[in-house]
Length: 356
View 1 (cartoon, rainbow, N blue to C red):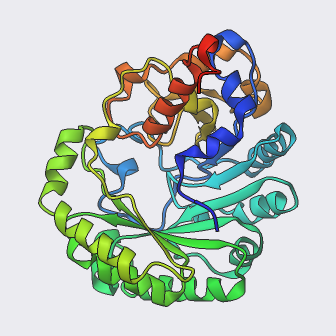
View 2: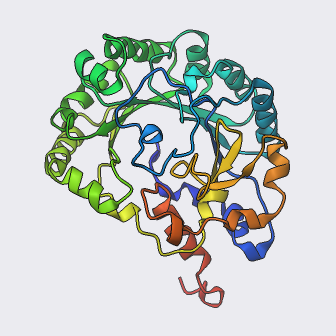
């Protein structure tokens, strides 16, 4: 298997890259869309960025929002017609709480569009699980607790939920080897001592990979780094041990546990990636990215509540330049490094391109 977690995928789409600057006047469809079908969730995670009063992400989110079925089918029709390459269902809320998710994935399974989802795994059962197992490209289960007690404390969910989700994942892997099953291990001070053991447990379950990521606790990179500073070395040692002793033979450990300052400060004035990977919220609004979803003042590109997504996308390129990262994005940003690469590519002097 090739590299799954690489920022260089975008360079397989040079036509898209070359269309990004304002002066080209060209608008090509996004390559990837995150759809947040519902803001409802069956868990109540203590660290959830969408429900934290201290983080800019999700500050204007209404937990009651959900994309109506008719509108969702219209969006997916547009996505297929436009030639979008992939759709990921995510939160906001828990995608598997969306009552029409089965209809969505059946439609996508019959199309060329690849699809995936983030989930807590609690509802990874029944027919919708079967469709994902046989047709989705990947599924990633978020994880924090390491047993029933700790999981219940993190998620404020019923006792025994961790064990139920473990069994859901075991059953899912038995259905089909088509869908790549990953786990996103969100690390904070409470579970920092259990990183290696949790990764080992996930391997025993039969998942394909574990991605280790830091919990974001502040809009400021320095405060996040200070929070993780007391556990950083221990987590990195456990990650290295997992890479050395657990990875291989069909099991990947991806260490994305890093100092967060590097993803906060921005010097560039426009965001190329918002034309590459865009976000549709449960409020039927289009946002620049997952780190600015439900932030109406700083992340909103426009509304599709009363118009088709394809009409919105291909009208007026100027909307893609409404976000100035140097002014409004000095917080966690998963696309920061990708933006820097794209801008460096686009800003190369054309007269000197041959001197490679």
